[in-house]
Length: 115
Length: 113
Image (cartoon, rainbow over all chains, first blue to last red; front, side):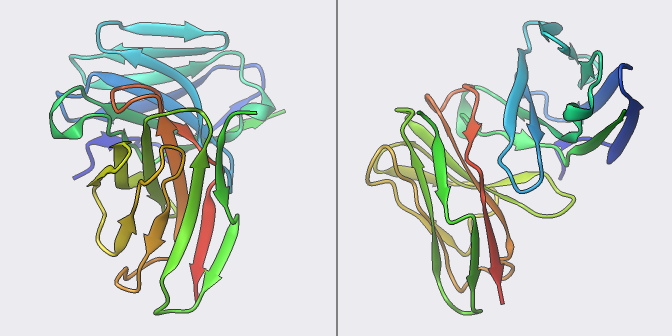
């Protein structure tokens, strides 16, 4: 049962344009969401997060949007740079209960930014 | 320099042998985690520990064991009972076991021949 889904295995964009990575979740108990960036044979690097009390969080070129009613979040990268090429994972967690502190990850989306 | 270290980067073992993967952090984080990544899949939680001398099973704990005798160390043993041990293993830590951001080590690629 995939509770966090990234339905696009890959995305290709031109340098300077916007990259939009999408993520859907099914568990309504999730209330904290994160995006990680990962290069091959390395550990994921934290990018940005959002709490369910917000619908938008911005950090430089990265903005995460959360639509709770649709159980959907997206990561916008503007402008995209070739160095952004990596695998992007979204992750979700919930406070309390047996899942305290546990992250559930999506399958990842491979982003390629062409010069 | 604070961070999470995993060693070795690459590890080869023969089928039927137990192997222990190292994870050390000097971030003074209370919580530590072990994940496994397989091609085309997200990270799946093996075990996690919110505090020293305590740990819980994650989603795919079968065939694995852990210990948390020290705050900074959380070694993972892949036993011969794990049916598909070849994978990329990632260790992470966070300040507490709440919704704090988890920070990852560089990973260990285990190949069982």
